Length: 117
Image (cartoon, rainbow, N blue to C red; front, side, top):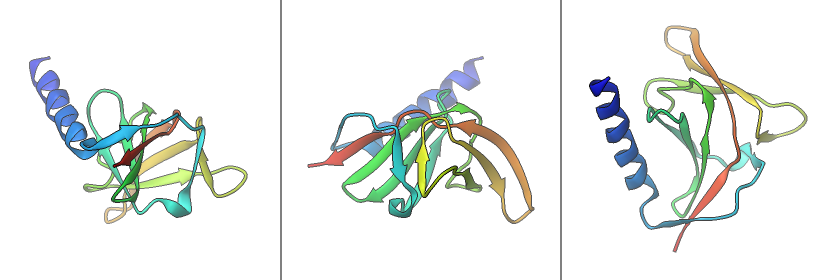
């Protein structure tokens, strides 16, 4: 619908702003969770998540599923198997920690590093 397309366009513009001045690197299959300082989600039809490592480095992943609202009013609960890394194919859920319930779930894709100059 037109309202969905408008929302996707707004979210894509917000994503472009978040990545402005950064250059995409080679996709990686895993990232270390201990390095992530925060997470943002984008309701752009691709389920995009950004994991912020520093002002100059973020990792982007486009998920399969629905983890909308992360970083705004929901937390990201990750299910990590075999270590402290979040990898392609790992499952995460969005959760409202105040109300005490989980929402949608999503699977991670490759993580693309975006580095600032």
